Length: 297
Image 1 (cartoon, rainbow, N blue to C red):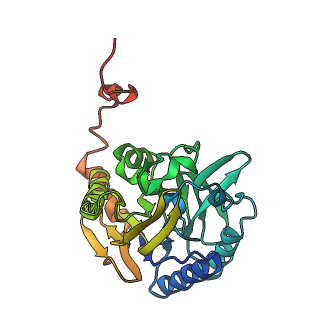
Image 2: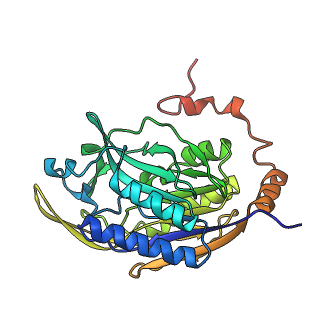
Image 3: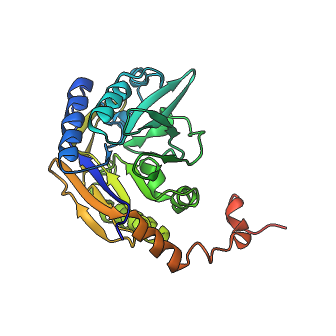
């Protein structure tokens, strides 16, 4: 019997610090993914410019724009409608006096299905996001697109198994994670790329759903309050299958358009027969609701 098949894609490219150039690159790669048969195409996190969170600078806050009538989202809506593809669009959102690391989900007819705001906000050397972003207030969400019900979270969210499980419990058939991650300015010997991949492979395998991760490449130098800071982004964008196996992966230097096809009906059957959701014990997971993991009377 013919299953319900979907082709997903992860894009990977180096960003300049010019919005028009980056949006043009994203569009070119979306078109390339479409030519390869992709139905749902993931662009990397905050692709409109450099990853500015290396520095705490007031002028960078001015890069935020309101969700409504956002020019890049509007352009991607037209592109999605033209090609008949789904495109999650990452952007820096201004919402009155709040600011969010957000993503709008554009369906294959150009409809904006709604917004997810990044829930987990990192704060460390080179990744000083708490200076710019409020913690997301949307909660973890799923979006019914033309091709599949998808869950989309953002970068640091990908390290938290609770986020992946929350999306799959709401019916997500595929997980998507736009990302900006690379070297650590304070420790040249620290390389998280394999750890990064294994964690998300675990999310795919633990929930029996495919997973798509899109990261940037290139070296970006930012002038900070303490001098120059540089991150070399390690790419390695990948697509994992429903048992956590990597089916497509990019390298750490080259622009890439990854594609993979999945039979969602076949995966659904395997997920149900494996029993991981049948045998869940939510009554025993109350420890997750405490602040420090201890059981309290």
